[in-house]
Amino acid sequence: MTVRMRHTRGHTRNRRSHHSLKEPRLSNCVNCGFAHLRHRACENCGTYKGKQVIDVESKIEKKAQKVKRKEKEMEEMGMKKKNTDNPLKEEKKAQKDADQGMTSKAKERKGTVDLKGLSKQPEK
Image (cartoon, rainbow, N blue to C red; front, side):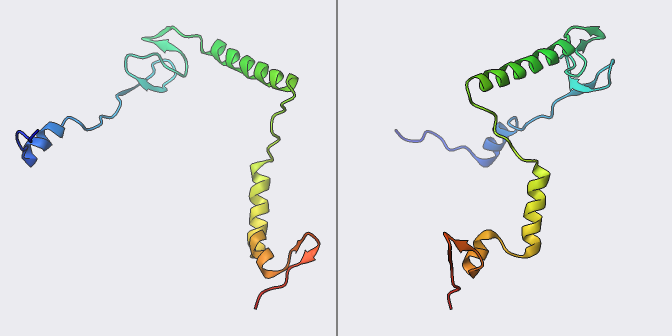
């Protein structure tokens, strides 16, 4: 099948002029001052047009109970949560290695690290 008609640049651009993204319209909540989408209930306090329509506190409590229940189920199944170290400790450790000037791989290449009881000699 052949192409019926070629569109000019102007025609194509006129068609695409409506494809741009528009920024969301935000309003400030009368009750708490939190920004929310227009004609939607405030996510922070749960009010709409000055009336309480969502009980936000009960939703937060319900979510916390669900998290606790899932953690309890994981412990019962024997799958304990990974014990993640404090990210600040990891950052300090990385900084200490950087201050020393070498990573572990660089130390291996230099021959300063023993691998399986054998010291690796630097290649010349």
